[in-house]
Amino acid sequence: MKPFIPQKLPLKEVKWEPLIPLIGRANRSIASYDGVLYGVPNPDILLSPLTTQEAVLSSRIEGTQATFGEVLKFEAGEEPEQESRKLDIKEIINYRRALRRTETELGTRPFNLNLLLELHAILLDSVRGRNKGRGQFRKTQNWVGPPDAPIEQAEFVPPGPMLVMEYLDNWEKYYHTDRPDPLVQLAIVHAQFEIIHPFLDGNGRIGRILIPIFLYEKKLLSRPLFYLSAYLEGHRDEYISSLRAIGKAEDAWNRWIEFFLKALDKQAHENAAKARAIMELYEKLKARVIDLTHSQYAVPLLDQIFERPIFQSTHMQFPTGAKPSRQAVAHLLRTLREAGILKVIKEGSGRRAQILALAELINLCEGKTVV
Image 1 (cartoon, one colour):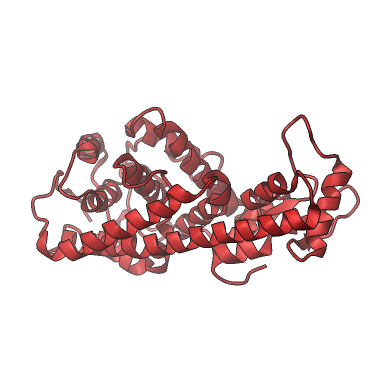
Image 2 (tube, rainbow, N blue to C red):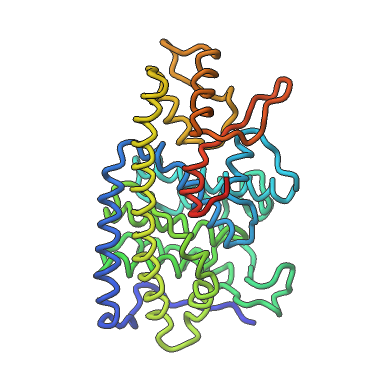
């Protein structure tokens, strides 16, 4: 199979008329989601579990098996039984680090190819693929296919390495131009990045990180927090086949854009509903924890639990100054456990502290009872 030669951007073949209803719905849904996002008082805390879940689902599209709960348990100090799960978890944590680094960097500079390289270096830090040109655009031919399959069995062969920078420069210029509709532009930006496949590993995950970056830079979101991987993971076959059809079938670009707009529309509704549910849970528990404990530390304690809903009882950290004693923290946690707010995941043993979980929040994020 010969390397694919993509079209340069902007595209000239997009048929706008059939896209108009989808464009309207997707834009309204994202605006509604941003309204919810804007109303979250402390998104770094309240939406932290959703950021972790996005990292889990985006990585799962690439074949990892670790779950949301396993990531939280690992961060609480519980090692997974299988070494492969540990490698999965490290990839997921790197993905989350890249998401958070993105938000920090976008506060001081626009997105560019240098930032793209920085995100890639974070993504492959000390995990599988770290020896595959970490933080570098590829200089050799890559291909997409079954694991360890030769290029002759490839499902897709991206452009040759000598063309990578030419297409990336064109892609970056298109990214920063003003087009008739930014959501259609985003669909094209995402697909063209996957077609160029500029890295030897990590292209899919980096391509999905680009989605909230673009929405934020185009001022469609007040924060670069948009979690599309749930939809893409649930429609994985259609997601991949729609991308693979580009350049091979008539109207393939339009069909890809239609799929992407539907994904944005659907996931914006899901994200908004989940963010509202998290805020409602937080307000409900805040009132209950204050009532149960009558403590000045009730809200800071609850904030920490929301940010990390599986934790060791000794990992609570409070600002210096009027800091509660370890005995006071233990009493607060015991009160919440006895009230059924916290659940014991693992009893303490010797010097090892108890591992506790805010089961209601974890189950809300997962959409099913897992704890």
